[in-house]
Length: 141
Image (cartoon, rainbow, N blue to C red; front, side, top):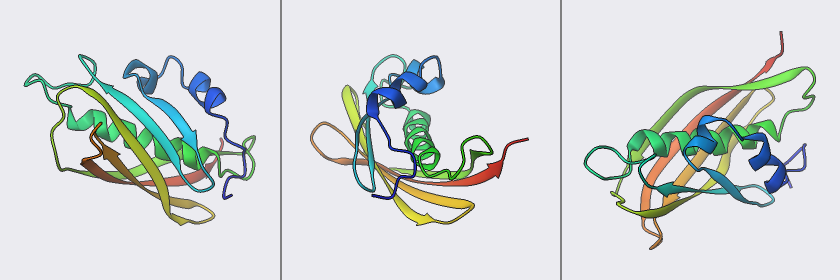
C-alpha cells in the first residue's frame, strides 16, 4: 500500500462536503493499495448546453481524485499541503446520461511532486476521457 494516511471513503467524502466536487456529485467509491476510484453523475450539474458531459466536469473529477490521492501521501499534514500545478485531458467519447466512473493511479510519486493518471469510463465501460494531473507538495505558510 502506498498511502501514508490511511484513506477512508466515508471520511474523504465527508471532508469534500460543500466543495466543487460535492456540488457536482463527485464521490470517492473505493481506495485500493495504489489507486482511487470515483464516480460522477451526468446530469444538469455536469452537462454542457448540448446535453453532453462537459469536458470541464471530467477535469474536475480527475483533479479531485488526484488531489485526494496526493493528500493521502503527505508526510506531515500539520506542515504540508498539496496544490495542483498542471492538468490535461483528452476527451474521447461523449456521454449523455447516467454516471461516469474514474480510476486514478500514480505515474510518479516523488518527495515534492506527484503525477496521477485518471481514466474515466461510462456505464458500458467505454473509455470517455484520459487525464494527467501534476501536484506539488508545499510547506504551509
